[in-house]
Image 1 (cartoon, one colour):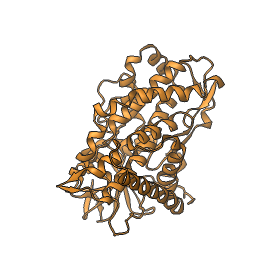
Image 2 (cartoon, one colour):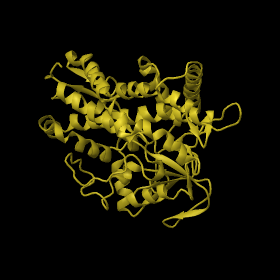
Image 3 (tube, rainbow, N blue to C red):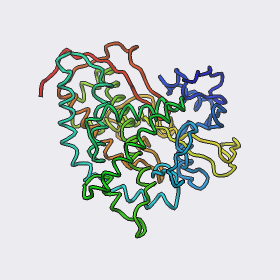
Image 4 (spheres, rainbow, N blue to C red):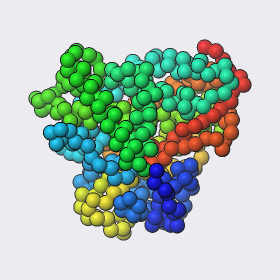
Length: 406
């Protein structure tokens, strides 16, 4: 693992893997904003800019001519190509004109009505997971609860084996979290994901007629032609990678907040109808995802000169704490009414799976509070966080002396 050099200037030498930043980035973004730095800069790994304001993030996300989605990783990583030399392309890492029709192809699988059919399955899953540790009176709910939910729901959508959930999360963590600082780890797990889906696609070709997303894409058309295989491979890989870590982190952050703030926890126990509103506030306050764009031409950012090929991070978490947009942005207000956050991104690449993520978060919190209405952090210092592309708790030990069996 690469050694992280100390940061001397967050304005000119920021480091997203700095332990201070990973554990609590919000004071750093606030200091940058208060100090009049809307776009911080670094030359670590590659010249990269980091907006700290809502306005800055939204403007970059909207300008798809100047800022390409060809490479969305927060650090430069090699692109992946198939044997014919086609880049494995997903809707999150494509530009116009390809992006729009390919995104429209995927959206029906993540529409509100389509997502709703997984609600009961998610409820049953959450209850089963809780039963596995409820009698212990304690659990690492990042590891044994939040981490376990998204891979099983994504598996149902993709038609893959849900019992391999631990494999899926290990692969995603290796490629998306650990791999950002270690190219060997990234390539090891990225290759496993690629080979896994090559086999799954081959199986659907040989056994057509399924109702899962892979089968659908194999039978679908774009402009009267079959969907290109490199597009299918890119997007089914995206569903696994993007659908697991993000929601795992969001559920974990919400439960971390409730464990650390008993008044909010008790209010949601007493007023469960408030949970959907609280979910929106958790998404705003603890937005997990940061994406990247690459400059297609020389440009400027608030007086900073940016060269073609340089990178900018779309720091949605920083934007969602901008006092120009949100009243008392550093406070988590679970009944906040005005909350136009951009936790799911902004512009044409806004997260296609937002309805699914909201449903999973809502159900995960509802079911946990029903069965474990009282819980608290076992040791606040034992909580660990992942950072970089996706931020969320990785170890979250809690204790709960009072619980209800359902």
